[in-house]
Amino acid sequence: MKRWYLDNAATTPLAPEVREAMLPWLDAGNPSSLYREGRAAKAAIDEARERVAERVGCLFAEVIFTSGGTEAANFAIIGAALANENPQRRRILISAAEHHCTLETAAVLTRLGYQVEITPVDRLGRVLIDQIAFDDDVLLIAAMHANNELGTFNDVGEIGRRARESGALYFCDAVQTFMKHPVSLYALGADLIAVSGHKIHGPKGIGALIVRAGTKPKPLINGGGQEREMRGGTENVAAIVGLGEAVRREPKPGRVASREAFLSEVPAVRTVPADAPSLAGHAHVRIPGKTAETALIRLDRAGISASSGAACSSGSTEPSHVMLAAGFSVAEAREGLRFTLPTEMTETEARDAGRAVAAALG
Ligand SMILES: Cc1ncc(COP(=O)(O)O)c(C=O)c1O
Image (cartoon, rainbow, N blue to C red):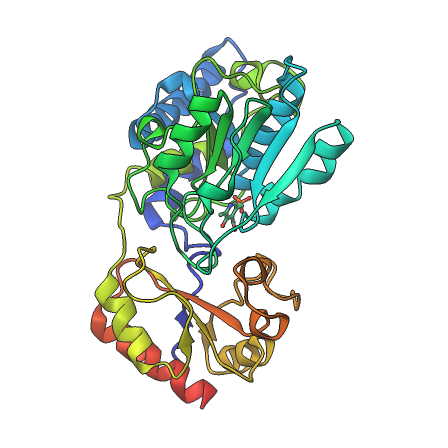
């Protein structure tokens, strides 16, 4: 049976050249050692850092490697809260459609004495900027670049502009857009940007937080002063090299025409209209009357991997928090299905995949 892997927003296959580049570094020296093996490992890390910086459009020293997007988000938000010395800035704003790795920091922030406000989103999961009070008591706002479930974009330029005007920090989770959409630290106006390796054909367990010069979140992982004293612990050299190799690949936005060809075959209600700007590879739908759980079991049996979009852990039967925030009912939020196509998928392949989905669900 042909398998269709249509869950590329969850993770992507490791690129062969990334695997090749990583292998010699599985047995790397300690990058902090001053002798030859250590210096070689340090040089490999710095080369990867240079490449990530080039892709993001930031400075070399602004790239701090982390264990992935989740750690980058935690580090950005909690690190900024810990570093804050201004007693006036006690509010932290988090968009209701953020990834769990951002939303779940709220409990820690509350314990640190911050007032966390979950800001509303529209029917497509986008931050309703005009409903946010960007006052001078806001320490930080978290609003992602593109939503991982629906694929829709926030107006990050405007969020960044308003954050800057009010003196607040802006954390932007760019995990879903990195290498699919131009991510420039300065164009976004973000102070802190999260990216991840395994969404771009790199390895899992590696990512980075881009920390704009002048911003200094307190480390969450304290240790030997690695990563400019912002993230302790001996570096995962092979994974960092893998991320560096993954960003050497050509950025690929995906094909809107392929998504449309796919959707034209799938008997379901689309969540995001064709004319709303969204990631080209994201096709989010609902099948009224059928829960995502039921649909996903049928799809898997037919050789199709997709997701409910509700959680990275596809075992989750919780209704999608993004759809609930966007105003869908609990029943509707249990029906959300996310297909994320490979960037190189042709229209013909997409149509075939759509037919396979239709046959599985029919
Ligand atoms: C938008 C978004 N942010 C963060 C993450 C977490 O990244 P990682 O898996 O590298 O921890 C994901 C992964 O699902 C994501 O889609």
